[in-house]
Length: 316
Image (cartoon, rainbow, N blue to C red; front, side, top):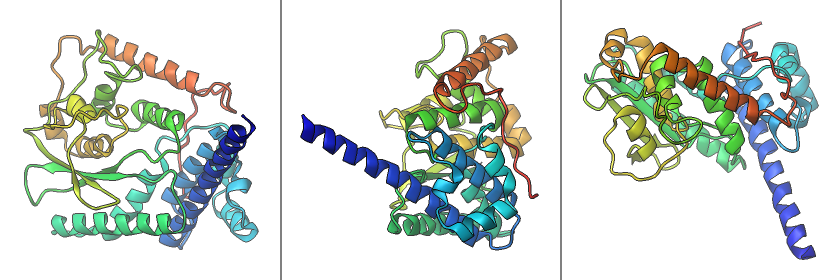
């Protein structure tokens, strides 16, 4: 029995070290990506990582994650708000969504969207390999999704899978994305199944997009094509033979399709759900359910008395 307890404690200690190492390495890498502060994306990413530390058990404050004194002082000088507000406000996105935006902004290729997509995927994959080589194993996205209109020259819209450290953190970020980040149609599709993981009897906001868009996902570890999971098939009407059910909203497809619909209003109008129970009142009930679930997830953390405040990044 004593041996089993020691083994359990050793495993817990290892997991804690993995979180801190992963968080620190991601921060160090994003600073390299954006060497000229301030950056709104660095600001947002820092807050998202620091928030993760605040709900981790044991809790890690920013000074516990950024153990290098000079780096800590420099970050506090340039990005004070993430340090101040990680105790009271929730992020709207998981950290790697910010990292993805950094790469998209850097490699945007006017007039050659295929080359742009190739560069985004390749450079993000290299970035993740470097993180893993350094020992990072937590809060790293496993997949990237690319969505576009059915035209090879059309704009690409990207998304990554949730970069979280465990199930409660992932559920928190999915709920936050539904409430404040994703296009409302994507949020409605996810809320159809979230948080119960079973389709609601009173509300159906799922989408049928297979015939309207190209939506393709790739592994960020191996680079190879990935079929949609069963969850994404249910949410977005994507053709798949997979029976694997991930938590609804966890996959890269949600963010990618959200970015597409936000930018392509004509496509969004064609995608409007037409189910009889897709009503304003039923949507509010679904949203209330997700809000309650989010509050429940935050119990027994520093956010137990949270007032529904979400973080808005700035360059100041």
